[in-house]
Image (cartoon, rainbow, N blue to C red; front, side, top):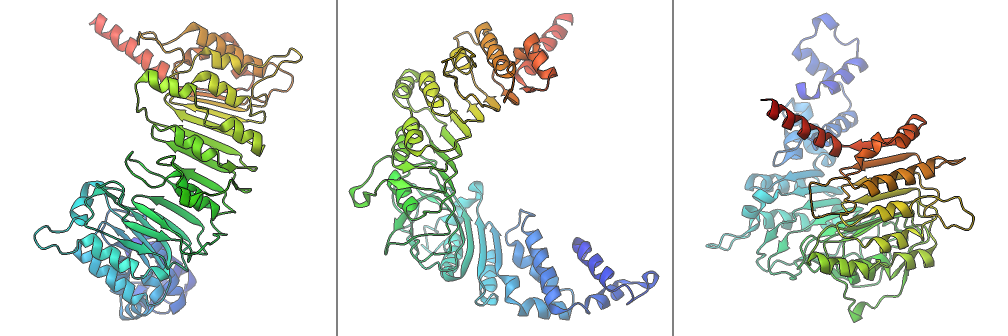
Length: 506
């Protein structure tokens, strides 16, 4: 009971006159606990289980917690074994024969109560649980566990499976098509090494209560009957390996067409092909206010998806391209001809966009400046990991007071530059370009030295412009209230200089 001393204290404060404080013994504690009403005891047990779910590295945490509580006394055992709510929260961190047996016990004792299930396999240990024995051909431990769960899919309230590892799937075929109670589905399924063989077949036509959907892996979407997921507000679709087929742009548009009230979208399409059997009309999502669209090196998929959308309520947009598949020159050429369709999206949607993030290694700077020209109300700009920027971008962000001049993002409040490289040169020992420092100082002071400045924060991290903090103009702006944060890069240079001087003295 020492693990749940706070619960015992709650009982003590509720029944202060049962036993004098000085005379209390472990047996008197148990006597007080026997006076707790069953419904209160069930609530306390349930809180212990919910808190215990966060502890971590065990195979079958929820069942073991109930078993520990049931072993305290006869009364607690009767309450624990007779109440199905205490057996309906199942979290499995790994699978084994013992945990599968415990899973069957939980499913049986939970009776008809809606289930909350979590299954997580670590990549380093998942392989031995996923593959069948080649000598006997018996189902693997994972198949036994997942089979028991899928058999109860009609009772799922929340189901989360995180097992995105490679496996030689022995002709698996799991069908999820009866989900009347499901509200949250996080399904990161194993990926078949055969690339493209759909292992899990998902039909959401019988999931009217779905509010959150997160899919990853070898999945095939089924559509037995047209349906509308009115409660779906959060959608996440992603792939991590280039040969993986799901989700294509067609899959993304198919799910978006069923979610008219979507508010948040996180999607990484795998390919830009649009099969004729899903020739969907142009989609308008009136409530979508946050979107992240990305790819792992294939720029065309981002533009192919954005071209099919109109987003009048979009407030935050994130573009991610975190891989380079081609030689540097070819990547630059493709970037020069690709603007992801963002100017066209903003022109037809006219959204109140206030935040824009670009996380990309290679970006054509004139294309980036052209995108910013369509964002007059932008308040937050984040550029991350881009190695192809120069002082020209900083000059384009400078405000001009001459009449008739078009200023870029005139109400910008926060600028974040993370791991960006300006004026990339072949000599890696040249860390700072004077033109970059001067352009950055001019840009900041032009946005600060005006009657009503909107700029509030400039933050750089590993961006090779930390010499700004030594510029007298920037020092003055900081003294007058402008938030300035310069991180790490100059500190590392100073430490290396100190170490070199120490070695020379020795």
